[in-house]
Image 1: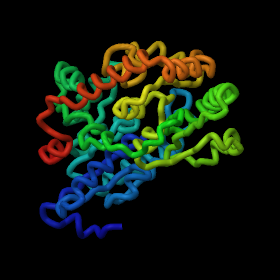
Image 2 (image 1 turned 180 degrees about the vertical axis):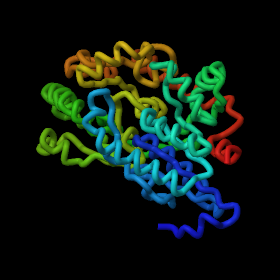
Image 3 (image 1 turned 90 degrees about the vertical axis):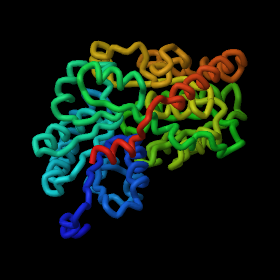
Image 4 (image 1 turned 180 degrees about the horizontal axis):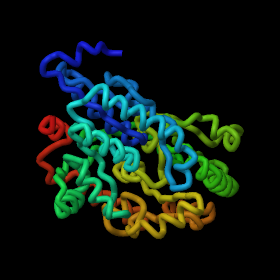
Length: 376
């Protein structure tokens, strides 16, 4: 623990940064590392594996707190409540100059409200997707968020239209061109990216296993790779894949190393779809929820697509297999099409080129780091 006397040093700025998802943990760590040489800034945070490797003082380990779904959240409620109370106490005791909240909407909005009641500045990075569902939340956001740092150009216009101070800071995935590096030339695997949350991985493993079994029967030489999140114990895969030497389970801190090993990919909806697209690997997207969560989502969600690739491109650039359509038959058929249909594959990669330009050719004049500096 850092000594409390440091809090009294003149001009020292204290920042609490909160990330509950794996992607948020990555973005938070990038921010902390960027300011790591600054002696006048102290970071405290809630995060997981990546944040643990930074100079920040970890207040809450969020490794087991990532969850998706309305019903699923109730199961996690005691853990989430404990983490929320710990963070509120930390905000009260540390009294930071700035609270940075990254995604993780429901949890972070509660912290934003609490921080605002204490007169603490709140910067929200990776904004709540109110343009997709539950638009009425804009009133709550306006009341407790000082600045919204958004990663898509259309979000800045949206928030400003509703009277909320917002700044487009560009997308973090393209800020340092990490995705452009070639990590592997052995790209003969069919890759599976089941997600970073334990409950979604449990839903997706049976589907992945069925797809692999179907393809292996007709093509026993084909190799498969499954990307495992750092937050999830590999043992969860052993029951299905332990005795299959043609299936490789990998845990890479740099996800692009795994993506580079794939000729095609199957990915759960999330940030990973953008990462695969930036590497120009043909893919399809799938997702399975509990029936009650899916039913509620169908009522509330306004967007036509669920994958970020399709949302940004505003068209069906990659096939989405959701809920009842997320079957081994459908996914196997799509994989065969991706592998064997050259014109189809070429069209998809052309769309990925367009996606890269949309994310890279930003009109942002300010980075997230600049915005943090100006907000302090």
